[in-house]
Image (cartoon, rainbow, N blue to C red; front, side):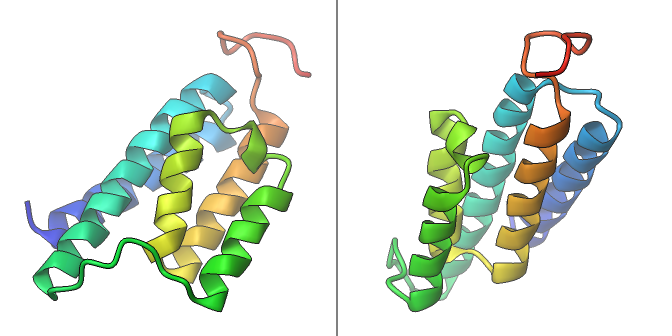
Amino acid sequence: MNNTNYQDEYKNAIKNLENKVKNREITWYDFNEELETILTIYNKKHDNEFANQGIYNEFDSSDLYKTNLKGISSNPYINKLDKGAKSNLERMISQGNQKDIEKIFNLINVAYETLPTGTYINTPQK
């Protein structure tokens, strides 16, 4: 699969998840599952880009990366993510673009504030 397919797949998946959050059609648990999958797609896209350029460094030690990691540890909503989603988010930060990272951070914040935390959509709010 080429990078264009990954990019389109990522954009479509993010838009779909944003709509589900906006319309409250998903629970926090399901949000975590979908976010983990979306970030896997994002990370695969970047893995391919780096491999095509002959770049194989896994983690970026830049100041921006360190700042973003601090953002994860200080954001209470991000700490509520399940292990898989949080791990993929950390990986995205190591190689992702700032605009994409901010979009994900905002989506997580909105999702945690608005979505039911139970197993079913009609679970009462926290």
